[in-house]
Figure (cartoon, rainbow over the protein chains, first blue to last red):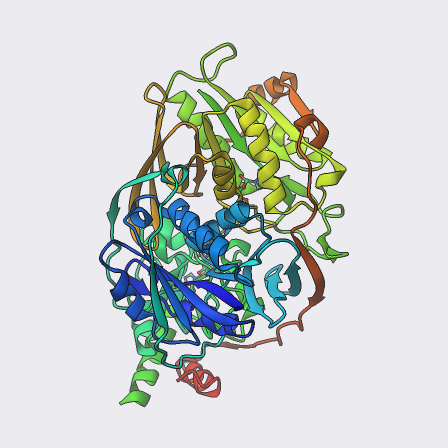
Length: 317
Length: 261
Ligand SMILES: Cc1cc2nc3c(=O)[nH]c(=O)nc-3n(C[C@H](O)[C@H](O)[C@H](O)COP(=O)(O)OP(=O)(O)OC[C@H]3O[C@@H](n4cnc5c(N)ncnc54)[C@H](O)[C@@H]3O)c2cc1C
Ligand SMILES: Nc1ncnc2c1ncn2[C@@H]1O[C@H](COP(=O)(O)O)[C@@H](O)[C@H]1O
């Protein structure tokens, strides 16, 4: 029976919304089997979280190697599943971890790989946006099992509730997948705000905040948004590195991206240019970020943001 | 300790890019060293400097490896002027338009033939933007993969490499034993400018050129094909206002119009 594998996307122990997006794209092609990689003893808990999206089956593999040996262990297991299940395609979330797993699986299975797809058609043609979103490229894989990574927040998820058939597999992880060893993990501070890559709205602050993110955070909270930052802001230690948006930070494509006190350097744009709408607040009318704004305010973020926040909160009251 | 640094020459990120016959037009734009690979070169320099340097005849060497057209030797030369000992350029018409599978096959072949202990890459090439080549090289070599490092410590006598990395799940400490593939993030260091002395010295260093035949591999062709590429409609010009005290309200109105609140 024809099926498509998706790698259920967990950030730590938390299932990300991207999983349902992967399932939605996969379901256009064939029946969807979600692969859940869990620490020992956590398989049923993790599998139970995969309850939304057009998923028919779940395959659970438990191993502590996923934490200790990272990418290599996950790729090893995923490849074993590909060998036995012969799927039509494999879809994985397009972030640092997902792309590396995909890369290794592509090598192991001698298959073509496409990264950062924003859409996939029923006949497995992937759409990618390149050159800052100005050009759409359609491509397909001509060799092996198509391995495609899909950018979070690109596909409108079908969030139907499901009760997939759960099967647990016992698998040995190869020695060559155990060569790198994680000795400690310090979890990030819980912010209470949505994940950057999953959020519908991202509000980012740059050097223009001068280190004071209060107005940016208050505006974000009024919208239930995630908070991002430019490299100038993370380099200065004003905001954690994990919140950096851009070429060497995260790629986001929310419904709305708000750039506050950010000039719009090409490296910053690389991480946010495909946002559906862009709102800019910047003192300098010449700032290049205005070129991609749907709505731009030439003004001081410290006076504009609080008024906007007040206006939004007043509407909610 | 034998260190290899994988570097790529890419179109200048400021240059306007376009597609020609389904491939990036690389001929008509300025080519530069992928800036994220400068951090890899710098880190290699700092690692050898922490262990006595890489003077000719000493125990540590840095070799830059690049797959690309002939002019990629300019980028190798830049790395040599930063202090690397030598370079290898893999240049072949059969490799034009190569994808990550082919690139990783070529690079891992050169690396295993050269018996390198430590392979350092950037996290991403600014043109392909796939961030998969380092993981693929590690997979092909069957060796440890320590990617996205924001700090690297090498113990040459124990043949061990330890890194710190920031991921979705927090701050991780990892280690592996030689051979190890590392990729470094741009926050790890500040790349040096080539000194005049470095530039002069680089002129005397050797860049070895290889091709598919001399590597003894076969290239299986493309694993993926571009069906078409098209310009998307340009973003409609936005509305830009100057704050006169009512910008807050106008933002609210914009959000309402976009159905975001
Ligand atoms: C290899 C490499 C990788 C990089 N990766 C990234 C990346 O991933 N992400 C990233 O963001 N950058 C990245 N950069 C850095 C990038 O080139 C820029 O330096 C950076 O984005 C600038 O940040 P900024 O816009 O906050 O600061 P600036 O460019 O200094 O802009 C600050 C803006 O704030 C405005 N401003 C000041 N005060 C106010 C106020 N009170 N109200 C309103 N506006 C105000 C100013 O007019 C100005 O436009 C990278 C650079 C390199 C070399
Ligand atoms: N053609 C190439 N030659 C040498 N190194 C490369 C090449 N392509 C990619 N790399 C290395 O792999 C890293 C990641 O590239 P990529 O996976 O293409 O985003 C780069 O920063 C380089 O260190």
